[in-house]
Image (cartoon, rainbow, N blue to C red; front, side, top):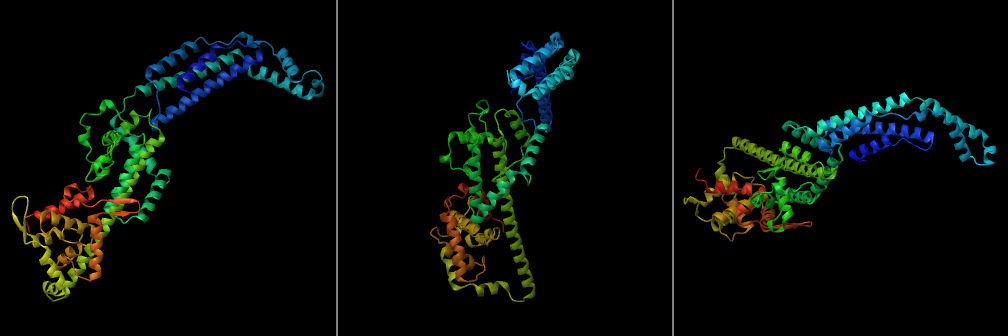
Length: 484
């Protein structure tokens, strides 16, 4: 029962104590006392809950004040009618006649006597004292008034920044617990996704994009027209990294604008650091948000964190492998008196040397108008990437085409051969060249995995999706750098 209706009901029950028969009136008083005690218990539980998790609906302080005044004015004048002192003997006979009419009484003498004893016991031990009734109900009303005073205080409370942040932290901790259903569900979905993925940056991006769409389809984000600026569409660049601009509807754009107030997007990732803003948002909209809406947000957060953590682990593993390879190479060099450069030239197949001469341009001009040597710049840029990664090799090839360091009609196998030809990649066999070129071709020309289609790389690296664009920017800078 709603708080205000509950108070109204108690007042009505307190006012209505004139029953037609004695026992009924006494039972009404007992029921009234239990009702007031129940109300006190409910208010006390809500007050306790509000101390730890203030996502409960509250009336205004004025409404609580009105309820308190009504209880105060009534409890001061509450008295029990003297009619309660009257004997219930006649009423017990009436009840027995009703339960065992006519001849039925002779067959139920024992049961009839039990009913009479129960009625007399109630009258003697429970309902007998007017003072007891008045004191019990007045005390219960007093406790109810104290609860209402506390509710007034809570509804008028102005929250501090630290309390909003604490609210968001507590909810985040609750939903990130290893035993929480939300965490188990997120882990299960992510592990299933891992089985079907190729650990490609585009696939991580697609996973997060799907979760973002699902969040925007829920009622978690509340569009507040009073805080929607006219130029909000200028703040949607991050959204278009996950959902194509042409595929976004107006509601998604508005919701993402308000989501960006709660979650920062930086360096191609969602950063869940705005705990104060999140806590304030949850508290402000507590009357509209339900548990499922709030869980949808923390589910999105959990999937993002799982994806980012897995991406970082994969990157760390690759870097560790590269570091190990470089260490072994240094050790090998120290043990050998052979000239490494001569050995490298000896091991490079003739077709790779020819490919380098065929597909590499002699020079190109950087954005500053400075002419640079193509072979030298490609070698320098290749040293800054994970050369064993097909994806990063594909990005390097696209940048080389963009700056005109290679022939624009170059094929992926020829690009790999050219890199071997200039000594950037170590030659192993033709099968390895084909495998590397196939992986690059998928990244450059796009491919379909399961039901998901991954688009080809744009000829302009600035239009690539966030993860690729970051690597592309790094390659582009090195390709155009004048420093050795």
